[in-house]
Amino acid sequence: MSNLDLTRGKIKIAPSVLASNFENLKDELILVEKSGADWLHLDIMDGHFVPNISFGPQLVNTARKCCPNIVLDVHLMISYPEKMVKEFIDAGADIITFHIETSSDFQETVKMIKSMDTSVGISLNPETPFSAINSILNQVDIVLLMSVNPGFGGQPFIPSSIDKIKKIHSYIEKENLNVLLEVDGGVNIQNAEEIRESGADVLVAGTAIFGSDNYAKTISLLRG
Image (cartoon, rainbow, N blue to C red):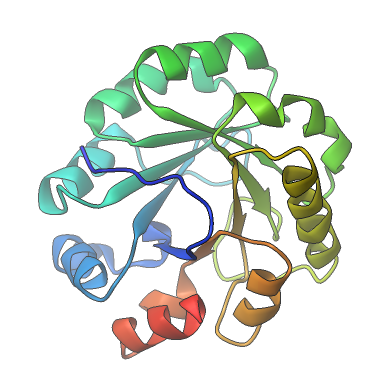
């Protein structure tokens, strides 16, 4: 497992594995780590909670074996996350994030993840108001804001996400919470500065990184 640093103040870049070249997956992951990635973001989709299917614990385990020191940020876009938590943690996940919109018992799922010495994040979709999670932020390590509708990579950033980033950041500051704000969806070198300045701590980027011809340069530009 990696040495996960959840302290705020330093921008972290998390390339989204969904956008990588799966024909050369191991080489891609090793290269993106050498290029300065802090985390690897792995989107787990079940074809039910979101209209797409991605990959399972085996790929997380592959990422762990080829990049033993990087943080594996596992984003469960699935209907019943509590049923899969243990499998992904056993596969090597450092962070398990699940959606507030699922039918899961929030308290029980958080308790389960923490009992396995794993960091926990809560995610919300673009149409879900911040009020759905503000009362529970003190129980998690990360809040993951979707800035596109989840399910497919390569979508454009939803502009109204900026106001939501600012609102969540302001609440975290006001309540003095040690919670990282992660933004996922449509992040690129053109909008990264505004996203950072609005209060994001972690930027997830897929196409922007894996679609570039220089991973290190792109990661550096995203980090600012």
